[in-house]
Image 1 (cartoon, rainbow, N blue to C red):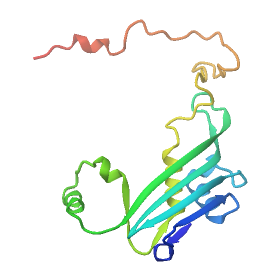
Image 2: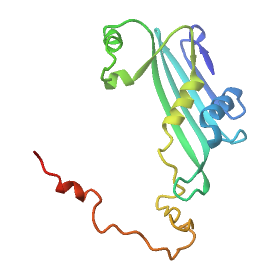
Image 3: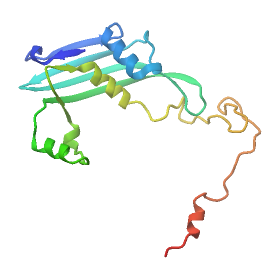
Image 4: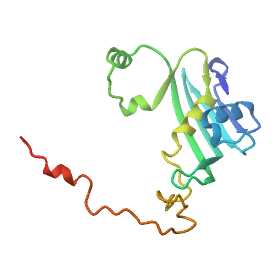
Length: 184
């Protein structure tokens, strides 16, 4: 959803959205790819408020995710709630901005992460929401917390049945050999 900065009223914008809105389907299918189906039920609320030249965009969304377990390779689905809150200020050359661009390595502070800059007259609220949904995704997908995964010898799903394959047991920490190294 493209927001025209000049057209945002002083009282702001409040709107609900769903999978029926084209911008929602486009952003989710592009960012989530196979994790999202076009016919999935998506619901959410978008709030935009304006203070002088600054914009506060808040969005909440509820949607299903279709993933494959990274341990047992079983497909599963779950639902997520995403909350996004971002403050936008017009891009201008501040002292901090010059410092960040002057050197290639600059440590970002919490204040740097609390807001974003916008340039021009448009802000894509859908892109902001899609970005937050991607950031809320787990590093690995597990069908359940205690997923046992697949047996590395025979490939059986250990959640469904036990196998008789010998389990490799490490009698010693594999890093124990490092203790034999001597300091000079």
